[in-house]
Amino acid sequence: MSVILDGKALAALRKDALRVQVLQSGLTVGLAVIQVGDNPASRVYVNHKIRACADVGMQSFKHHLPETTAQADVVALIQSLNQDPDVHGILVQLPLPSALDTDAVLAAIDPAKDVDGLHIQNAGRVFLGDTGGLVPCTPLGCMMLLDHYLADVPLRGKHAVVLGRSRLVGRPVASLLLQRDCTVTIAHSATQGLPALVGTADILVAAIGKPCFVPLLWMKEGAIVLDVGINRTDQGTLVGDVDFDGDTAKLCAYTPVPGGVGPMTVTCLLINTFKAAVALHGRTPD
Image 1 (tube, one colour):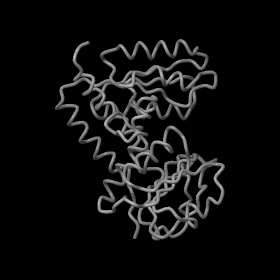
Image 2 (cartoon, one colour):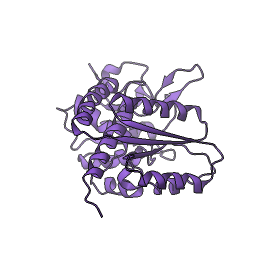
Image 3 (cartoon, one colour):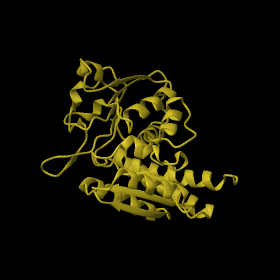
Image 4 (spheres, one colour):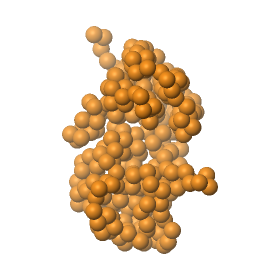
């Protein structure tokens, strides 16, 4: 019988623990969230993050800018938040409007407040095997799910196949799995022989943004499947990148969609924000 990696349940446990940590720390922890434009999905995600802050006793500062906001104005806002002592974490909701340079916007964030872990300094630390800083939220959530539900299953030596090479998920989760001594293959849209490759995976991370793209038939007996995809169908239902239609008992473990990786992403954002606040308050004055 396969194990369901219940992200909703684990997120609730982690948020309960974090709420106590925030209270005991005596810190007033603040997260600033920037949304540019009126993307409906972004609006939902931003409001979810704002509510999550309140759930654990953190402050939130929402900045909703018009679609036509100039690059310089977005960067100026970030620079002001970098200097704001009440703000310990800064998150820019992606995707940004096409007129904006995403790399330049993310580079403007103080790495110490980059709670999404996407600044080149934080991304570089993860790539080099240093997870002491701010790790991207979704990959961190994936590893927490593995550690919580499969603590007795060694990752060392397992073949992990990562479908997707984005800076948000694919590349950093591959680095985290390498640090756990997995053998990692990154696949993408140009990869040939994908069904056979997926069939070799002891651990499959699906993060390509294509609904039900990977059928259960491709997967080997005893595989662990982390479905990062969140896709809305024409009927309005949420589905992942994996099609679990069939006998999931062949799998060792898998994440449901919704209720798997998604709740852990938001929880890890809160964990990173508290971590940043502790570090910032621990700094010695210049």
